[in-house]
Length: 452
Ligand code: ATP
Image (cartoon, rainbow, N blue to C red):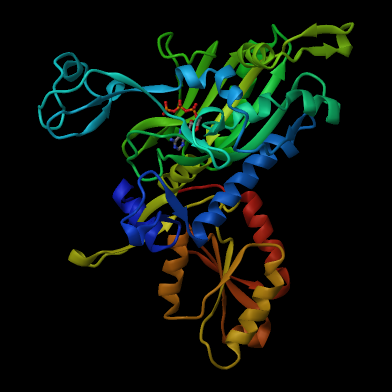
């Protein structure tokens, strides 16, 4: 009998720490709010997600190219983008217990009556708080030396749009993709890595002809939905939410969020925005440079392209995939002490380790044989080797790491050259000749469908 356990943020956080996915930043000093460190499995998972997105968003398209812009940009960029003026959260503090809230995240009654939702004490007036981290460049503080840590990667794309056209001969419609760090001085950072002050974004800005924007906006919504399907996400845990007129950002013509049903409820995962001509118009105005596109396919007509943006959080996607993959499965009935295994059902394309090779015993040459088999697989797959402890316990460790395939080397391997291939999801085991192992794993990855 199989019973599915529920993912809670406590369980996910604890598993993430126990298995080396994510650690609290500067933990030995009590931790740093809003910052997290990625451990050995976490960095593999993050890299896999990034590689998968990069392939999907650049390499599978002729007309999309990548860039990697600097985090530090000219301060005027953030005036042009509207961040200096508008990138603010409304903030209130409790005069009694000193708790701090985002005014848009507490019940309206509390705000109207100026009453703290935690202790009932009196709240301050709402004030605007800019989310950008400001620092200084060079040894002198203040004035002209102020500079910001970028709060989004998108502006690095807009300011390079002409460079890309001139150096790469791309033609409209075309896209520029980027993965990188972004920083926001978030007031409320809870729910593990969901909302952090330092995070990573995966953004693709698609430049289209005025008038073609609605069609491309719909097209990118479709493509982004299909991407999550291919990642093997439970599609009933995803939905679209359109921004209402009051909620639309200052730049947006239309905006939809992809939301995921996290343990704490439906929350944004990615935004798909029709940004219109806002950004390029503003950069034209602030930089004094002509940012029009010359359309050689349309009688050298000049125009400022419309921009369709797809903006996903890399670290937030990692959290989503941890939640989505998390499962507790009852593997044996033992009355009061039923035996459960914790398993991360990652798609093999993003699992941090694809194949773990395990000798049944260390002795009798099995360890050496297993090392040799691992060496054969190393170039094609991300592999792990584990020889410590009972085999059942080693399988459980790999289940918790989300490793889809285990290869066990035993005495029969020495005799007939076959190994046991064990599948994470079904726990089924089959014998495969060593010579066919890599090909078999490749086929299994291609055909993978999540069934649990
Ligand atoms: P919110 O309203 O929740 O603050 P946002 O609408 O400002 O977020 P965007 O600016 O559209 O978010 O950012 C695009 C994506 O970047 C988000 O969908 C999310 O995945 C990610 N992201 C934004 N802020 C954070 C953060 N503080 N920590 C982690 N990821 C973030």
